[in-house]
Length: 96
Image (cartoon, rainbow, N blue to C red):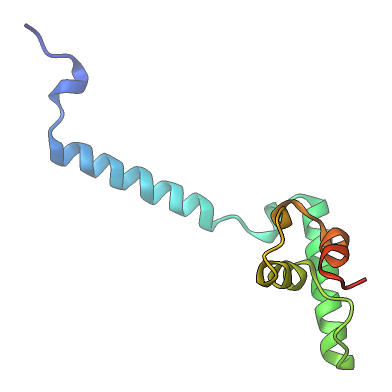
């Protein structure tokens, strides 16, 4: 009975290949910079950052960001919160 090419590798070779693949995948994820994101995502992140900065300057707590609304919805255990946008989260949690 003959061995196939896949049967000739040793356990250490297989583990080394797995480690190499994991390292390559990790490196690819870490290179995901803001410049590589879609324009709509960059715009949304910029607006969210501007809103946070504006609130910090003025001392106001409104309007909350989607992340803040999501955290509040999580505390209130609202179902479907992960699929909701900022406005939906605001309505659902009572922050209109």
